[in-house]
Length: 566
Image (cartoon, rainbow, N blue to C red):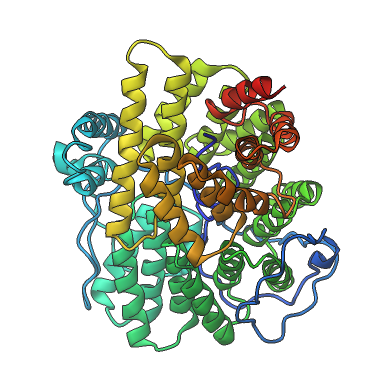
């Protein structure tokens, strides 16, 4: 058991990944960048601690003419839209039809927040029947929840008409305002200018962003069609290639993400999105040395919030929390838009939470919510920090709000574990319903081309089919070797009683110096199970010292195991 956040890239999170157990910035966020300014001074990554026990993976494709970064990241004078897991403040749009060759797709009408909550609750109730019915139709049911109940509840008011633009839509406009309105503007423009390759690319990028921010993977096929249309009209254009990199990363196809990012950078070495996606892909492939170099290159070419957050995460993965904090604080000081402020402050809150500093975490989450009181990663992070601080009632209320709007695996499992930890009448059934929703989200994600094996492994090892968890973890490890996939495989092996096989993976998950209490807890439990009692006690003690409230259930299990091992 442990905190179940997004994958490293979702986040966030990371990513992107809302707050995660170690998620970095979500791949591909922010508007596509045009030509960059003269290279600024970037941090020197060579000074970060190296790990002797972790062999350096083979390098991915490199971009020519990478400058050597200088000593400190430069805060851009113009606001750069945040690339993290920003969450739209407007009602969730229905998925709509896919993009045709000459006709952009329309979105369904908006519905109100009360309807969204009701739709998710209906869907949660339906979850009781899914396991016995082998989750038949679960993807369609979850789509109802993700689209705000537009199908189940009927369409809301007709959307206002948007005048068609007379010229190509500026991709940067999508980063500073309402994403849904930006998509509507692009659709209207493309109905009158269907051969505008740049606007097709921007629409594809916007669909990727919308899928990520709303937890709705049904947008990915639309994004793919729009990006392919752009490339058909203008073969090799860097904006569409960067969009393909972001899309591949969002679907967890990180090898393709790296390939597309490199192709885009050959066309435009200053593409902010391609530079960011390249860092993301290398991180998610476990090529940390190359990711460090790529982060320095990105900072030298296109300094700003998207690059700073990735640079910070690379250092956090190597155990250099001080540098990660310093870079994020610098990014926060340079943030000039509410979106940037909310995103970076939430990242700082997550970093503080990872270190067990809940008061500081709550302070940063409050700052994020002061900038945007609907920013779901900050709401999720605040709920986790409240739970870790002992305020379970507030944590449950906050996490219920999050999952009603954003039913992703991390928040769903966290809420389920909070119910189990509370143990009131009906809480066990409530928890099971959250875990059933995880299965449904995974089914929907896979139906839309997303590799969800890591999500499956993490959730199922504790709360589902343990054999399925192991199959998924092995499949993900075969694709990429990261600290997160190592931890997931170790824990899935442990859940299946294969602790001797699990131990090397648990050790590898902690080998880079990454400070993650859940990883230490998993390692400690596996060490105890294999007879390494002293090592197991040390790992469990380290987990609880680092972040004593790292999980609603896992922290209690760690204390219980530690007491029994003395």
